Length: 83
Image: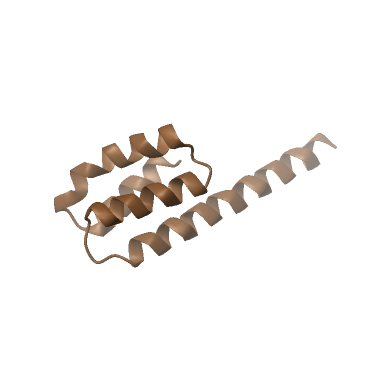
């Protein structure tokens, strides 16, 4: 019985992770450069994914180092932060 509960929790968390990944991927793919509009859209998406305002703000602050780098670097950093 308890395995069933944990399996359902694990399955629910996997769906949540996939949903967040999909939404973040959509934001990243819709921009060709990293600018203030990108950061605002990304922060809004994180908040809407229930990451939380404080956590979203911290993630965005950490992302400012990628302003001069490629979006793929930013995508890797984001995936590491959300694990």
